[in-house]
Length: 469
Ligand code: SAH
Ligand code: SF4
Ligand code: F3S
Image (cartoon, rainbow, N blue to C red):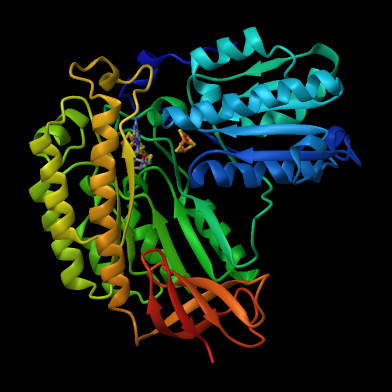
């Protein structure tokens, strides 16, 4: 077993790596014909997209999807390590799987995703759940087919690499919809924010080549996709690890020029957000006016302890520039409350920043201590009750602005990508605006995956109501 090594992951050398093509050995094709699988995804969009690949691999092996885990022949947990509750949820599910396995000894079980990259988790799984078929890391999850087959003869297969491996291209993907697609542009993260486990679980930053990305987008366009989301933990660092002079801005412009109707990208780190990117947002109507720009805190002291590399003033200046050049911009963010040492004054600075930025959406979290990260060792860890109280106050404040911003849209017409029809109500649909706001609306005979104008009639905190025709 190759154990994750935090020290090793922190070296700063630029390593060349290769790009290889994927081929599922014919031996595994249809090996499991007639069997079913249940796949549970716990994490972010990257994790979701990995699940789309895992589903395709399993389906090539002959598995069929089963929505009820109790009935499935194979259960795969694609885990997330970002906060303790994600970790606990996966272990809760492992416990239920253990009971199921006692009743059904032929049940196959596997663990993959970010938790597989944590040494403590791998040790615990090997000790308490040795009946699993495989534990596979984030750098080699495409090996699930061969490891699953091998496990049937040899028992638990643990294959986790502490360092990132070559980038594998042309993996099959079972996309969730035929109109919206995720496209990975960069893997891993080099920022090492002091609270965050991602650089250890996903490895150093590695960009896919320009050609591979543009090929994938062209294919999606040919297949009729309406929306492409460029994915990475830090998309605007794209290209910095490549031996070519090609930045995220240039990639974004090339993708926009291909003519995809809607382009989005997540997540942007404020430190890497360039004026060129702002200009592109203003210039290309198919780059959606919706930016996710995690701020984490409004206190310079805390931002410094977090290792975020920007000050509150730099963040506010960026927001001001964005709002000035993109009038219909919807801005969303992530905030952590209760980072070690956060005082009431620091927290109030975060509230004050929220008042200025007036976010359209915000994901708010209580700081969660992660094993192996620098913040774990910081003094003055904050009590849970204080974190809870701050989270509640923060949520009240951000929710106020969600509603206020939504109210401003009442009476306007918004372009909405139709994503589904209501199961309960006739002639009722839902979809998302260009600014990524959920709209529930009435309409007749609308096709899913189509972009339609919708008149906004009412605003709620989390959604809009309207009518299409
Ligand atoms: N790469 C992105 C998102 C990373 S994870 C970025 O840099 O913004 C998504 C969010 O989870 C983070 O933005 C942060 O707000 C939150 N998060 C990460 N580690 C956390 C921790 N230890 N405790 C609480 N929240 C955390
Ligand atoms: Fe984590 Fe920071 Fe990287 Fe985001 S930028 S993934 S918060 S280390
Ligand atoms: Fe979670 Fe890993 Fe994503 S820790 S948030 S699944 S990168």
